[in-house]
Image (cartoon, rainbow, N blue to C red; front, side, top):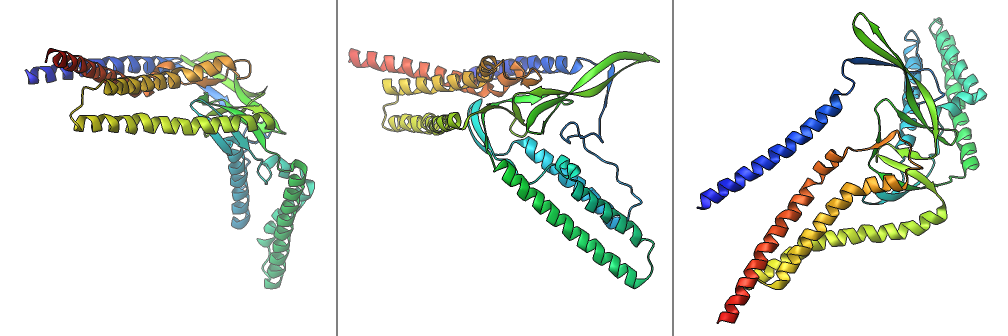
Length: 372
């Protein structure tokens, strides 16, 4: 009999798992199959800084002297790294589920457009290029030595100019911190990009042209266009950041801190505290106790509500802030979020079934005591 019931449990679990995985697979395949048979080509503006430098990839002549070539390559890499850092939106964060707050301080270095717009910096940089080219034509040791000294002096001047520009920027911005209401779980289509330029928030979105068929192949070309938006995007945290005032941030922060630590306390209480109390009662020979039934039901209810909050919370917030969030920002598909939260619902169901068994045992115990 025990083997029979174990086999039934195994079959039920296998059927439910198979059904869930099949539905998930079909939905994923449907999403992937959309647009199949069409080749899309995007014209990337690699030399254009109109999009905040996110596509900045200048040509570097490989015939330059190695140290000059390496210096330019490192300079471009540093510029791209700085742009990526800004777009990550690194800063102080407090989150409760799908909502939170963020405070971001502007970095103390400049983006590529600041260097490119400074004439003195460009004059020194171009002169350094010229000196590097002269070195290849020099054979006299004294001339080479003088050339190296001039190059070093120019590099020192470039460093000093960079320092002066950073100091100027610090005085101009006064390290103002930007405050935001953060909504988590958003992503952009792979071809769309967020960027910041001159203190404004923008999207680089693809404008697709007509589909052209050549020798049986369908090709659609697209170009990037700018779309100004009123929110910031933190790519690393996948958060849409809605600007708020410093006063609002100071009001929200203690509330979020209380909610975060309250959530931690509730999790420990439900996952550790209540099971320990139930085990203590069982060890005392008092397993079928009405309090144990209540504890199990509370555990089941909290896990179920947490799963619902995590499943529907982002969509409710999207609805509440629909006027602020651009349509290009997308939440994960419902079936994906359901799959990610399935363990909460299964755990809640399992504990609820156990609570029913304990409630039945409690009633039988009471009947037995009344009979005696």
